[in-house]
Amino acid sequence: MKRSEINQILRNAKAFMAEKKFILPPWSDWSVDDWKRNKADALEITDNMLGWDITDFGSGDFYKRGLFLFTIRNGKFNVDKKPYAEKIMIVEENQETPMHYHWSKMEDIINRGGGNLVIELYNATSDNKLENTPVHFRTDGIKRSVPAGGKVILKPGESICLEPGMYHRFYGEPGKGKVLVGEVSAVNDDTSDNCFYEPVGRFPVIEEDEAPLHLLVSDYQKFI
Image: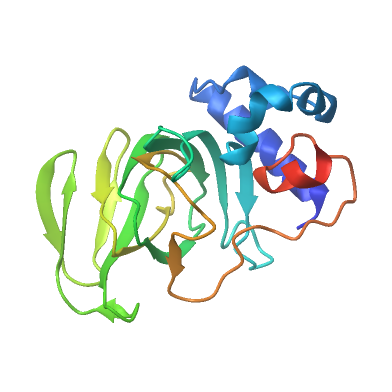
């Protein structure tokens, strides 16, 4: 991805979150110099990969297959005491986050506002294939089930609990607008706890055609 494209995605995301009155922590606006000055005191942020995160999953087309995320809080296995994580995401209409599951992480996916979020579900087999069995889950504490590959539509205010081993892919419902999506979960580890059904690139290779508007989590080692 080009840095100029990433910067524009960030501007659009900030405008949408402001519209929905979702406020990020003050360090979200830090410059590179701010990061360098606060490096020693901000190790939880950089070590636990908090902050801005944009991926096209290696597709080359962010708006077809991609995701904007901001990790607000996160622990780290066997390092600190925090056993939970929280993210805010923006999902465009028909913008796919591809099919995947987590070995360890249980998560609640929450529609925080905007359009509707469509989630397709499968159980995973022991060899990471798609199981042809009904998927049992809860939405806002209520038991539900769908057949393999079934769709769950979350309207604003609704949530779903996804357990480890539950394959899911999601996108914004066409014609309903982009979606502000929250995630509350156990500790998040994108380096070792994601099992994608098809091989994808989690973090983008960036072409530096202009200066970063904000550092992404994948930028910390390079710039700080």
